Image (cartoon, rainbow, N blue to C red; front, side, top):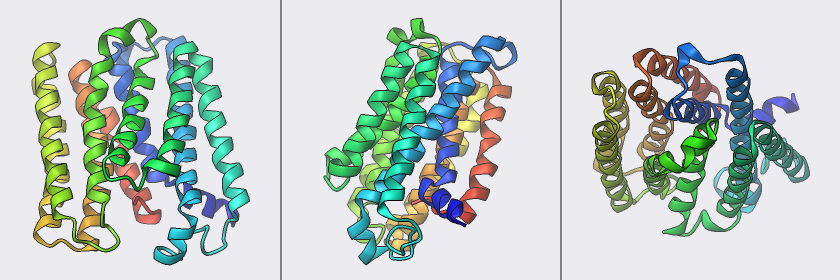
Length: 295
């Protein structure tokens, strides 16, 4: 069925990690899991729908613009294999981005503007920045940083005081994007090593936030430790044996580890139960990753 190939294009396992961004942003904004009023719950659901549209649309356009490359390197994918036409992919991607923008705008003006910015950033990355050595990782990092900011925007008054927290996912996504260099041909030890340095920067940044905001360090530590272990181990393996399978594994681990990273935010800014709620998305994403591509 055509819908299956549409799902392949959208990378549903990755979309689940984007939902975790929204939930982490909600926690950072100060909305507790146990005390979400009906109006805020509706806004949370709208922002979740928004990130599904924005992330899904961005991934679809990623394959749309990589059509010629994928014909050579990944001919089995829906577009180069002819399972989905370029016109169908463009309609799907455009519709998803529109859903993302409209859903966010229903929450508030600032949420809508952030969603519109994400639309621009993902298209900039997909069309121009992706293959740029320096610009690519940071444009993709900004896409994810704005996604966390989208969650924070549920409380507009908190945005001016908390925006810099979004620098953490920016650094980590830049690390994942760096790691992905060479996932087809290998030979990217330096890029993976630089990515590991960014990971350490992320770790230090979260520990600094814990002190700055007097967060519940004991609550967030297990989630942060899980993120560090599953992500860092894969990068070490990719450096020791620098071949495409290990690089792709490191990228996949990095993407999936966004969920425990977001769970650490939820646990620190709210409590361990919110962290577990976010972490519960990890097995969902892992199951989807067995059926659908992540990289």
